[in-house]
Length: 531
Image 1 (cartoon, helix red, strand yellow):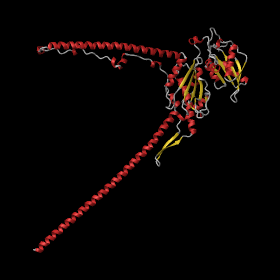
Image 2 (cartoon, rainbow, N blue to C red; image 1 turned 60 degrees about the vertical axis):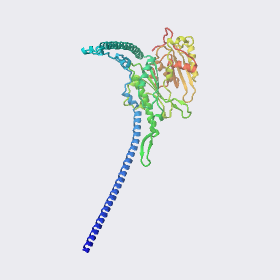
Image 3 (cartoon, rainbow, N blue to C red; image 1 turned 90 degrees about the horizontal axis):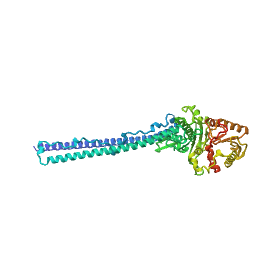
Image 4 (cartoon, rainbow, N blue to C red; image 1 turned 180 degrees about the horizontal axis):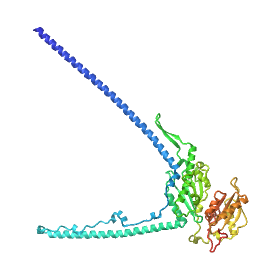
């Protein structure tokens, strides 16, 4: 019995011990599983972190590559704009539409002003109180209140009608003002159109100011210009500003991202490439200006055009402002119409037109403008401008032949030439031979002068050229008190000849001889030889 009891206790102890060991083993398995799960989670987290780092790194590298590509796209756009300066103008119509500038006023134009808007007045019956019913009339004081409300409604309605009438009156006044302004504006536009079509100098300049202001160039261009028009020769003169090479041509050829040091580096554009592109920009600009001038001249008042392109910058040697002319070209409308700008090579085209082109535009090596625009601006004195200075300013057309000869001789001596008078021409002008003492550029200069009222024809220029050849001179100068025709300019183009018009002469006399003169043909003046 005792042995059985002890056996039972032992059995229970063994079972308890087995249960404990099983519990411990279960707990150990759970701990191992938990540890393994933790390790798996750690490895997963580490892998996820590595993947995120990789993605972030990849995204950063892509962003840096895109940054370099964006810079390259901007460069490509700049180069495309510069290469397309001429091409961009060929598809653009800059003609000023005078009809589109006219103003047309209507009553609707007043509605933008809130104080002038017409607000409809509601009918009176909508403002009156509702009629009193049978029981309403029985209420004490109801009739009095109803009458008072009706009177207030009537007063309000009359006030609204009065306000409406006042707005109508203000609208009528405002509309009359707008119509008067529009009429004045339209009168000015019509006058400008008629004056432009008639070849009036100021109107022609105003017209082409509007034309060139509408022309869009690359952002780096200052787009500053000066315009003059000589009605005697029907010649338009345009001075235009372009940026210097360093401001216009990118110094970078390409951008690229270097991963090893995390930098965007530049590949420099060669100086030779930049200079070639700048020469193209210069040539394209000159041809574009000529195209825009002739293509937009709807009234065909311009027979020839002179375009000179300048750069305003600082001289690196002296630190002073300079404004060298880099190209100057003169061409007639007929001659330019024969050029197919879609297919020309710009620099070759300018050479064919005998343009003055800088040999080294990137170094700002200047050429002489074919026409000084400041001289063109010295207009012939009109009768209204003469009155106050009639007694103090000499009239070149009233001088004797000897006085005119002395004047011209004095002028060219003041300009640095050694002048010798020869026999005066029969038209009262002066022929003389002058000597330019400068080495290389100097030499013998034949000067002929013609006091003409009418335009000087091409035969006078041919005669001068023949004299230059016969005399073995290096240059011929023709001075006239009038202007020159298109054929005269065309013949002189590319030859050692210079044509000085009456406007130029007045400017030169003022600048070099201190003489403020005028040119006004006396009544009944007859040119010695009118061509």
